[in-house]
Length: 82
Ligand SMILES: [Zn+2]
Image (cartoon, rainbow, N blue to C red; front, side, top):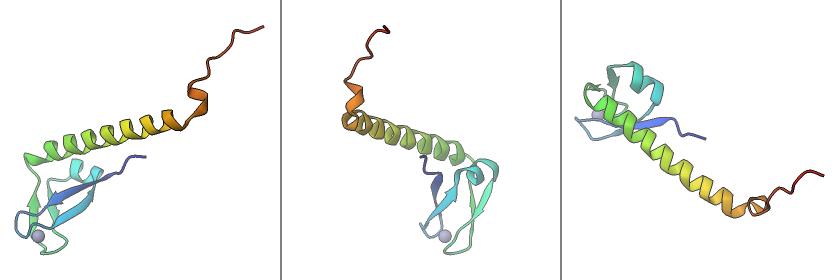
């Protein structure tokens, strides 16, 4: 359900490199896909991950809201057992 890529912008050419979250979390440096320069994640690493998680939470909320609207069982209350 979660989209597990983070867009890491290259400071040299501005290219957004779609990078798996695990790589952003584990690596300090990433190569730019377009210009080949090394992107130092350093301080922005945590920001990128936080941003990514926040985005996914927002997405999850939206899909939950949609799911509730579309689900006919949501309104039905369970009756007591006989
Ligand atoms: Zn680049």
